[in-house]
Image (cartoon, rainbow, N blue to C red; front, side, top):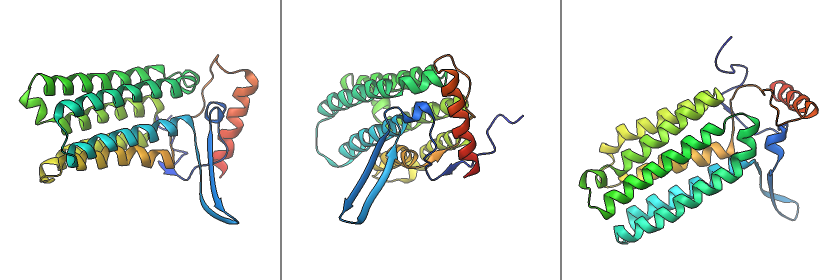
Length: 229
């Protein structure tokens, strides 16, 4: 039996046949002007986490590249945004990861973000020159580790590929000239926002005490519907 769920493609357009844990907190957006549809999308709580982190990382790295703010001020702003992101991620993901028996993935991501934050703030406030000159590969590397762990937990080729893309970003950084923060922001934020818009592969639904027998049967039926689409 394959470790990965080869019955599902790496990515595809989102489907309506969602599991119980995805339906909880589902955000549906339908923007219209009269009969003209401008934008229509649905975002599970996991998708919402990707969007939140995508905007946070985008703001952080664009600010570092373009705005003439002191590093100390940026460190304070980055710290607040990162801590807010960790709290938001933990809150939104908790039911989903409990159902999927993947609480450890949240712990890993939270630890990686806090380690990165501590090292970054130490580099800025304590004047660690080597840290300041390697902030971009630091965050790309931490993100890669997080994606590899997520890919292993979900048995997802998509997340493993995302980790490889971040490692490739580290390789590309020396060729980015005077745009290292923009390059890093594009890789990190771009990956997150892309993942929020597609359906990625993962292992089939698993039995869990969090859900009733009826809910588990519902999830299995939804999984069969997704395979048939």
